[in-house]
Image 1: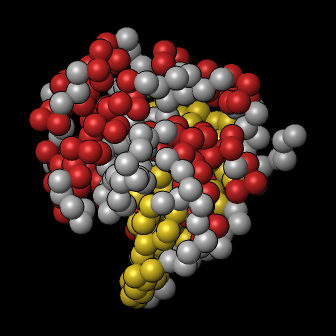
Image 2: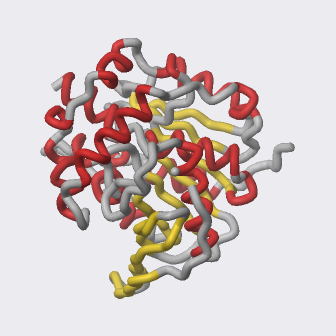
Length: 298
C-alpha cells in the first residue's frame, strides 16, 4: 500500500520550445443538462498538439493535472460540480493523455509557457488556475512567468522545494519503474492516448524531471501577487511544514490541511474507496475562495 502511494505521488508530480498561432482543431460541442456545454479539441502549442476540454459557462478556471495523469484520472469527480458555475478548461500537458511528446525533457517552466500559449490560442486573457501535484508546481510557474494571465491560483499538493517531501522520496524517484505505476493510472492513460506505447515515455520523462528537480528560489515565490489557496492532505506526501512555508512566502494566501491522502480531497482516481462521498470533496471551499472578493496586493 505504501509503495503504491509513494509511486502515485511520484507519478502525480509532472510535466518544453517553439512558437504557435495555429487555430484549434477537431472541436466538438454537445449539450450537457440544461445549461452546460462541452467542447474539446487540439491546439498547436509550441510544437505540441495539446488536447483540451471546455465545460460550463462563466469565468475561466484552468485545471492542470499532475504527473502520470490525465484530465479524467485527476479531475473527473470535480469537473461537473465546478462547471455548474464556471467555464472549466482542462488540458493535458506534454506526453500525457491525448497530448503528444515533443522529444524533449519536461520542465515546469516549459509547461507554464505551454499553458499560456494554449490560453492565447483560445483567446482567454485572464483566468483562475487550479493545479494538482505537479500541476500545482506548474501553476506556481505560471504565476511567476505569466502574472498577467492570473487572477487567483489554487495549489493542490504543490512542491516548491526539495525539502517539501521526506528524504526517502528522492531515492525512490531515482529507481522508479513503470511496473510500479498504479494500475488505474495506466488504464486511464491507455483509455485516451492515441499511442499507448507512449506510457513508458510519459513515465520516464516524469521520473527524470523529479530526479532533477531544483528548488524554486524564494524571491520568485515571494513575487507572486495573486491570491492563493494552498491545499494538502494531512496524510499527503507534501509535508505540512512545506505548505506552511509556502503560505508564509505568498503574501495573499490561505492554507487548508484536509483529512486524507494525496489527491483524496479532489477524488483523484487512485484514492476512491467504496465509501466515497461527493461531500468529502473540497469543491465548496474552492468555490468560496474563487468567489471571494480580495484586496489588491502590490
